[in-house]
Length: 514
Ligand code: 5AD
Ligand code: SF4
Image (cartoon, rainbow, N blue to C red):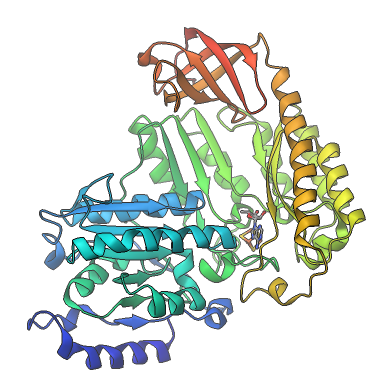
C-alpha cells in the first residue's frame, strides 16, 4: 500500500462513517476502508527488505464474531489459492465461525478467485450472478471476492459498478486482515474494498485448516519477479519473497509429526527461492536437501521456472529417497523466438540442455509441463517447434492453454494476427499428441506393481479407492478402506490414457527415510 492510498482510504472512511449501521465507534480498528488496486504500483519492485512478522494473533476483540454464523469458501485456480483458502478457513474458525459446504446455509460466502485466464474470471462473474438471489433472501449474508481477481483495477471497478450484491473485496496481501474486513463489512453499508498493491511482507503463524490429513501444502515463497509478458501473476501476487528456511523446516517437521504422508512446497517460481535473502546464500537445492532428512515419505515442489533450475537442485533430487521423481517444468513454447517475446529468458536449446541434465542425473524422471498456444503472431512453424519439443522431451502429461490476453501485461498490447480458429486447431493437435504420449507412458505399468499413496474413495465409485504414484499417476483400485492414508502396493490391471486401474497386493510400512 502506498501513502496516497492510505490517505485516500482514511478520507473515504471519514465520509462513510455517518452511514454506519451502529453508533459504536469502530474506527480504531480500521486503518483503511477503501484501498483499490493499482497495476502500476503492483509492477514496481523496490529495494526495501522483506519484513517478517512472526507473531500473528487474531485480534481479541473479534474472537466471538462468528458465534452462530457459518462460512463457505469457493476456491478457483492454483494450489496457492487452495492454500490461501486453508488460511482463511483457519481465521474463520478462530473467530468462532463454523464451516458449511452449502451456500444456502452460509452467513459469509467468499469466492477466492483466479485471474490467470479470461475464462477463469468469467466463471466468477457468472457465480456472482447466481448468488445474487441469496442476498435478496438473506440480507445479512456477506458476500466477498478475494484472491487474484481482486488485485485487478478493472475487476474491482466492474464489481463496484455492476455487482452491488458484493459486500467486500480484498486482495491476496490482505488475507491476514480478514477479521477487520469482516467487521467493517458488518458495520458498513458500502462495499468494503481493501486491496494492497505492493506488499513486501511475510506473515508467519497464520492459522490454517488443512484439507485432509494425508497431503499438505507448504508455502516456501510468495510472489514472482519474472514478468513473463503474458502473465498477470507478478501483478496479483507481488514481489518475490521467501520464507526463512527455519520456519519452513519447522512447519514440515510438525506436519511429519502429525502423520502427513506427503508435502508439496509451493511458490509461483520455487526455483527463485532464497534469491531475496541478503544475509545467507541458500536456495531450493539447500532447502530440499534439509527437508529430505525429515521423516515424511513424499516431498514435491511446484512450480518450477527452467531459468533458475540449478545444478545443485538436480544433484539433490538425484538422491531420490523421499524426493519424488516427477518434475513439472513449464516450457510454454518450443520456439526460441516465441520464448523471447514471452520474456522467458531461455532458448529452446537451453531448455533441452536442462532436460538432458535432469534425465542424466535422474534416469527414471517423469517430466510434465505447461504450454501456451496461439501467442500473438505465432506462426505455423513456431507452433511446430512446440510439437517437436513435446516429442523430444517426451512429456507424460501437460497443461495446455490458448493464450488469453490479460489487461496490464505487455502481451495484451501486442497486435495478434492469429485467428481463434487457428489457435483452437493448434490446441487440438497439441492435446492429441499429449494424450498419445500420456497413454504411451501408462502402458508400461500394465501388470507392474506400483506404490500408491491412498487418498480416499474414488470420485465415481465409493467401492474403489484412489491415490497417486510417486510420478503423480492416478490409480483406482480395489482395496480395504484401512489403506486410506497409507502407501500401499497395487498391481496394475488396466492402463488407460490418464489413469491406471489395479488391485492392492499388500500394505507396506511407511517408507524408512535416511
Ligand atoms: N494465457 C494463457 N495461459 C496462461 N498461463 C499463464 N498466463 C496465461 C495467459 N495469459 C498459463 C501458463 C502458466 C500456467 C499456470 O498458466 O502456462 O504456466
Ligand atoms: Fe507467471 Fe510463472 Fe512467468 Fe511468474 S514465472 S510471470 S508466475 S508464468
